[in-house]
Structures are given as C-alpha cells and as structure tokens.
Length: 560
Image (cartoon, rainbow, N blue to C red; front, side, top):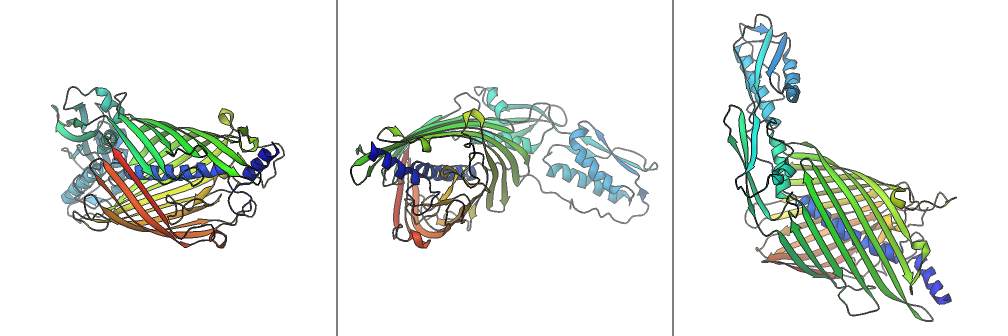
C-alpha cells in the first residue's frame, strides 16, 4: 500500500519536466484528445457549404448622393415611400431622407429611383420593385411606390419529400417578403446534410410580385461508416489507434445529423491501452442550430517504481449542449452567435485506488461570436469565445481558504480561432494555402485540464506530443501549402509555431517552439490517406533532450 500511495503521489506531481503546474497524465491525455477534436472542428467549420447565389451587380454607386444639375428643378421637402411591408424597408426610407432639400429634375429623380432599387437588391430583396407613380412635385413631396416581392410557396419538386425538410431549414415562410439571404440560409441548412444534393430556383407566381421557391433535391445513401488507423496515440498507452464511425442523415427527417464513433489502441498489451466513445446529434431550425455531443475515454498504463510495477488507469467523460443563431448575412459574409454549456468529469486510479486529488467534475458556459468572410478566392472563419467555470450541475467549487495563486474552478478564459485558406492558382491542379491560428488567455490560474498545449501533429508539427509545452496563456499558428498533383495525391508542406507565456504564479517557464513538415494526402474511391515527416526547428532549452530529431505520422481510413 505504501508503494501504491507513493506512485499516486508521483502522478499528482505530474510527469512533464520541471513545471509545478504541469497537467497530470490524465489531463495530458485529455489535452491530446482535445487538440485533435479542435482540429476536426476547425476543418468542419471551414468545410461548411458556400451557398451565396450570384445576383445582378448594382448599376449605380450606392455611396454617392451626387445628382445632375438640371433646369427646371424642384426642391424636395419630403421623400415618401408608399406600399406594403414598409417596416422591413425602413432602410430605404432612411436612404431617401438623405435627399431632402435637394433640387432635382427629371434625370435626378430617375437616378434616385435606380439607387433605391439597387439598395434593395443589395440587401437581398431581389424580387422587390420600386416605381414612380404619376404625381405633382409642386408640394415638394416625391412619392415612390414600393412593390414588395413575396413568397407564394416553398416546395420540393418531388412529392415524396416531407414539408418538415424545408420547414426546419428555412427561416422564411409563405407570405413573407422574399429575401435572398433567408433563402441562402435555408439552402445552407439543407446542404449541410452530406447525402443531399440540393438546388433552388425562383419561379414566378400567379400574381404580380409573387414567387415560388422550388427546391430540387437528390438523396444519396443516408448512412455511412468508416474505419481508420493512425499513430496519433502516446507511447504510454499505445501509439497505434484504430477507430470506427457511423453517420446517419435525416433520422428525424428534419435535416438532422447523427454520428457515433468508437476508438481503441488496438493492442493486445493488457498493461496499456485506450478506449473511447463519441456521439453527436445536431438539428437546424431556420436561423438556429441545436446540437449535443458526448465523448468519453479510458486509459491504462504501467508505471515502474524501484520496488514494483503498478497499473495506472483513468476515465473521463464530457457532455455539451450548444445553440447557434445567425445574426446577419450578406452576399460575402455571415455572422452568428453560439452559446455552449459543457460538463466534464474525470477520475484517476493506481491499482484500483482512486487519487482523490485528481477527481474532477467541472461545468462551464461559453459564449462565442462567429464570422465567415469571403474575399475573392479566400475564405476566412473567425471564432471569438469567452468561457467561464460555473457551479451548475454539481460542478466542483474552490476549497475554502484557497490561495489566490492556486488554480480555480471559477475561471474566465478567452479563446480566438482564425482559419483561412484559398486557391493560389486556378485550373485542374491548383496550388492552395491554409492557415490556422488559435490563442487563449486567462488572468486566472488554471487547472491543467484547461491549459492550451503546443507540440504535436495537431498544434505544432515536428514534435511527437509526448512532452507538450502547456500553460494558461499561449497559442499556435499553423501554415501549409498543398498542390493537387493528381486526383489521388496532394503533396503539402508547412511550418508551425507555438508559444506559451511565462507564468511564475504556477511555475510555468513558457517558451516558443516551431516545426516544419512535409507530407502527402489523397483519396481514391472510399479510401483516404495522409502521411508526413516533421522536424523541430526551435524549442526551449529544457525541452531539447525530451524531443526527438524527427517524427513520422500517418492516417488511413476507408469509408463505405
């Protein structure tokens, strides 16, 4: 028992070199898994469909208020917009008011009407028209007639598709003023389902100003599965990792997505290993998207002491609920907000005896701003989030009399994620670039499970991740260039850099490391593969004897 307790004490101190705030092995395992999840989530965000539809360019300069000098001209005391749904077109009235006091003639009036029409078009009201009724300008009032374009109906071109499909995807309803941005939102929600090939067409309705939104949809196989093999594990629990994932689309017929996956080290070694489970489900509702996910893992490793060897095991589980809402959408951008509540629990054991000091049950709430911007060929995604530790759902609380320098469960943590990429050349074999930045900062002392760590294939390639550099404040910047040399082969190269800020409160020395990598990836049929070689370029002095001269990694998968 004394030896067991001694080993437990060793685990409590941690295994990372010379940092008193170092994460325990269980927390290191969790940080490694989190880095992989964040990389996958970043890829998924950047892969969301672009559904911006081409629309006629504005024929006039909307920023100009210049009018031609004409004789005769009439001084405008008031510009009045008449018609239905005026509340939605208040921006037009505000624009027209800018011409008050101007003396205009026939050409100037026509220019004002064209500019107002172009402004409505730029806002997405592509079927709305603005006319000029017969009138006398002797009173100084110019009246413009608004004829809003409205949606007569939204329908699929196939009768077997239930209405619940479009009702869950589109924020617009029959009778609403037709706005292309709302239709693009619905089209995007439909296209998020991988097994659906969706197109949309506007067809004139029976009455003037009415339009039918006709959706053509082709369904593929609603379920998919894949198996994978990689070497992203740790030496202590098994480098080789195998996984299997199944996806089901439209299980509830509301454009929902369900995924279930399992993973394991795939080793017959009973002294070490990892096993994991994950599941997620998401469903759209117009401008909203609701999702929930859970993932759990357990590990086992063997630790040798002077007297004996001991089995060290641990478990962790996570559950989170998220709701996302679109705030604004334009032809080349969209912005939204996300609220997420998550709970995480973990336990560590030595020879079946729990290390109570490493028992965790934490709850957090996170608010994030999301933005996507298109700049020519470049697509950029930004996520700025603030997370707080809260006592909800039985979350751990700080001990009475906690030292101000000690880690806290009531932390505040801000993260910034930026991902951008695009084609550098056109043609069938384009050269493309991709960059990703992640940074976090906190004024609080954090537990190791909330650290950001750098050094590994998902953060700074060139390091094996066995001895990561971690802390409360820091981040990494990944950069790569790829070339589609063949439909099944795409060589790539990249340079990554990571930095952890020094924190004397927690004994974190910090430092900067960088690495370079060269690899190739490809797809053929249902097969996908990725292999690379990475080398460290720079690292803190204390890490030099811990890091290898190079790393080799691979991943292979088959989807069916």
